Amino acid sequence: MTLSVRDAVLQRRSIKLFNGQQVEKEAVLGILDEAKWAPNHGNRQPWRIVVGAGEQLPKVHELLRNLAIPKWEELSEEALATQMKKFTLAGAYAFVLVTEDVRQKERLEDYAAASCYLQNVQLLAWEKGIGTCWKTPGFLDNPKFREALKAQPHERVISMFQFGYFDELPKARVRKELTDFVTEFEI
Image (tube, rainbow, N blue to C red; front, side, top):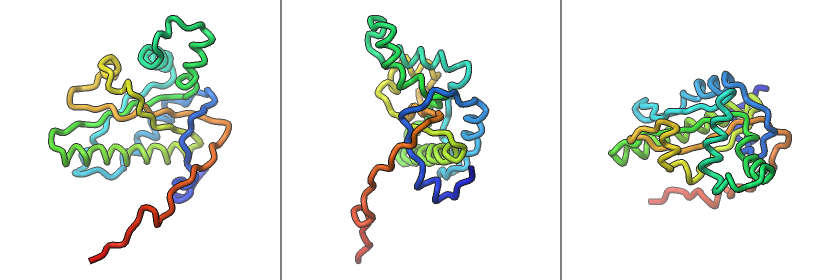
């Protein structure tokens, strides 16, 4: 499917209910590669991505279970499976890390650049019929999670990015009117 940029922007939705079909690692890597053309200050390209797809998915699920589901060992198999659906139905993962420059201006520019990169990822995936959801769970800063991603002291984990196929398109949520967020410059 080929979409205009306008159509991709207006039609894209965050998918929270994936159908469990895996997304090929090559498809994810292709999207991540094309997204690198995002605007970024000084061409620093401050992002680093850790991909979990294909045969790596069970290890990703194990890590997420251990960090996100308290006392999972005490749950019944059925209860654990129910809680894990929010992780196991996604077809691939990308964990996004951004350089944390000690200079505030550069740190903010780098976070903005990584956000532009992730918007590119979302739109490119959408064009291929792959849904995405940008999540920021509390465990992103957990030392065990950072260790699993081999995060360096100068890096911040900003996203658990899910990729997946879906059966139902979520309805568009209402957005603010232009007059609610734009004012004209006055002298």
